[in-house]
Length: 281
Length: 248
Image 1 (cartoon, rainbow over the protein chains, first blue to last red):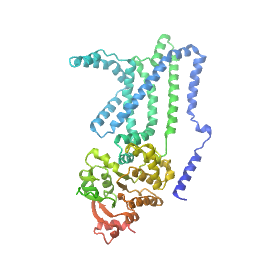
Image 2: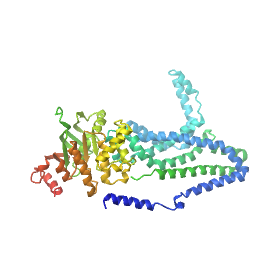
Image 3: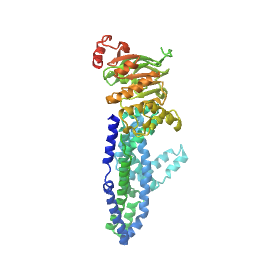
Image 4: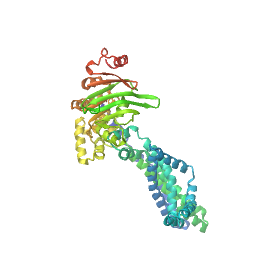
């Protein structure tokens, strides 16, 4: 047999080995998701008082939680890409700025960052505006009269915080691609950014997909912290409902189940994508 | 020296250090158009570093390199030079997320701005030329080492380079696959491609090389031709020592 034939035979053998019965191929963690979904639905349908009422009251909050998570996540991916490229840049200034950003932000709790952005940063901007009044009156006035939109402040806080962690994930993903890939691309005459775009990043995406997916799930849960900056997300709606009804157990049980339904579903999607995008090196 | 249009590569007194290790020590070398030059020497002697300096994968600490009349000094020139210089690596470095065909068309489209159709036509021609037209849609992971290296050669040729650099192209291959890669390289040499090859494949050296340089400790210590490549003809003791191990 020539080496090619041996190789083909080897591929065929592995291919046949991988055919498993259906019940083994299905990801069994889906069962947990459906169990939790079932319990939640049964509670809402067969115990409308109070669970149905709680669910109806929380609905706006669910929507806010979802949109804040999705909007922040898209921005986080952008910040992570820029931050990750900055961390591996040869230019010491760019590298320094990216590294300081990552190190400082990772050292401050997310809750404190959110409180800082919502309550402290308007004061800073106002002070800055007063100093600017002689130089640039229109901008100064805008800064002095600034009113932060809670949703915007929450998105900004989550993006800045998670962007730092995401930068590290992107950096590690890019660095995990063998150096020869960049060299081969550059030796063909591609620029650094062309090589990144067509050669390095498409491979890095497969490496970073699992940690990025985990970040998304973590972000969904941490978005509950935005309830402290006047955003009416699911957690804040829960607090409001409890305050008016004193049904602490039922309220937080419902809130916890709803978070669980969302996170279990997302974890499965992440696991599916992970399997789908893996490839033979 | 640089007025001589026959010289396609001019390396003048180049030195390069990695920390405290001297990789290249005052190396000068010129290659003429259409010439096949082979560099041999023990590992760590600076052969690969010299090759990588020619398309600026490594920068030099001092000295001058001119490729096809373009000095390798400014950043602007580097991409220009790289598009004229094809490189083949020991570890192939194919892009594993792309098929053989896509590996060959990517740089054509991105750098040479060719259309998808034109790039694919060229890619199919080159795959036929290196003897694996049927592997166009295979991913690198599905190809043998010899096939991967031939795709890598096709990928470099697709840019229509004036010079091809080979950095130990057969060292990572099983003995059975070495020949298929060397045959492709011999064809290229016969067509008049300028080639700088780091290799210890004596069969190829004897069949294709015009000049042979022996490197040791970052210096070129001896220049010879395939005809006089024998233990008796070499002046330097170190060359004889090395050759006694690779010549049978």
